[in-house]
Image (tube, rainbow, N blue to C red):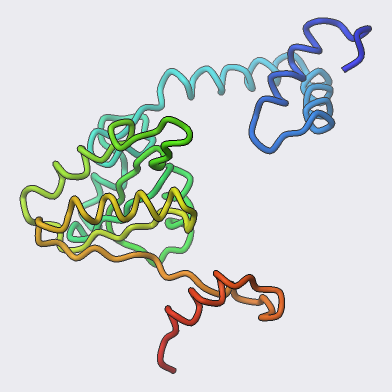
Length: 200
């Protein structure tokens, strides 16, 4: 950003640009938008960020974001407690909940095993998952990590840990997205689509 811009404005742009998926032009647009807000609205915006930081914590059971000790999903007696879906971040919990098809519980790892980034199993919430399986009430663990090298490695690592616990470990099926055309699919997607084909 040009050096003639006021320092507070440059700092605001830098903060927006540090967010994932936000380029410099979008950061500038957001900064100017914030500056055009009425002061009261700007205060509410900043207070919402601070309040989220102060009050949001990890659920003591599933590690999902919550503002109480135990999240609403874990405390819901109508959920199927025999199934746990393991996801990378709280964002995936929201995605599954939007489908309204899954009625089990979740476990959030808060990352994936990635030696290149210095992330090992001990940095993830794997031991908390193992603790949840000790009483024998869970019959299936669904590995819903991303279909990336890190996601596959994490799923395999956890499935090996669970092998002796007598639970069924399943993996999300991957293949062709609805509405896509075969000619544009890459080889890995096509292979996964073939492997996960269903009878009709």
